[in-house]
Image 1: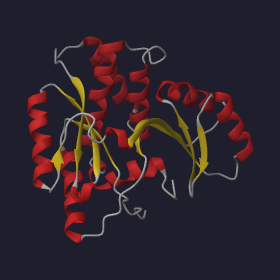
Image 2: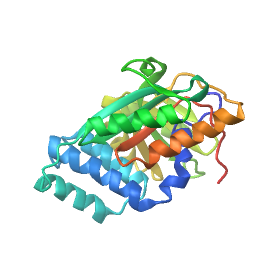
Image 3: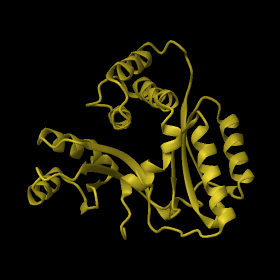
Image 4: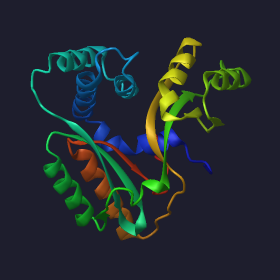
Length: 246
């Protein structure tokens, strides 16, 4: 990955919007509620729910919020019919985007997403136009710690059935096929590993460097606009984005 942390590259870019915890919690709660409606309230048998809960925990969403979202899914009081849609498109300088949405009105959402791409010098494409540039993977991140024996962790990762194990500057990163993500994550938690977070992501096969100032500004504005939309759950791209200093 030439120094690219799969987790931090995709997740840390959202600092400005994710500071607005109320907004991100609303999106996470919607995903949990829909997962319960579609597959039941037991994450042991509902992988979509298990993944949605892991995303919520990774964002430090309180357990009370998670419980309320599950109950809302069981009650199905609103009667809203949400569906998951992934839009593909090109951003400035030929960057590739995968935008995951959860919407109760796909015409509205499609119009919004198309508008953002057009406004910031990109264009919304058809299904499959950039998907081949990404790999769908489960990614698990564990903070580096002197308390962790790297060889023992590697053995635990292999025994759990993961595909790959890498050591980054501040974390250990484990990659799985999507179907094994929850099993590997739970096995590592049961083995006693802490400071662990995970998600199923679209991982770029290669990254695109962008140096033009106008293109850089439009890239940031496009990501911000997408992130602000209530229907957008996740944004993946192959822009070789500079690391954010924390």
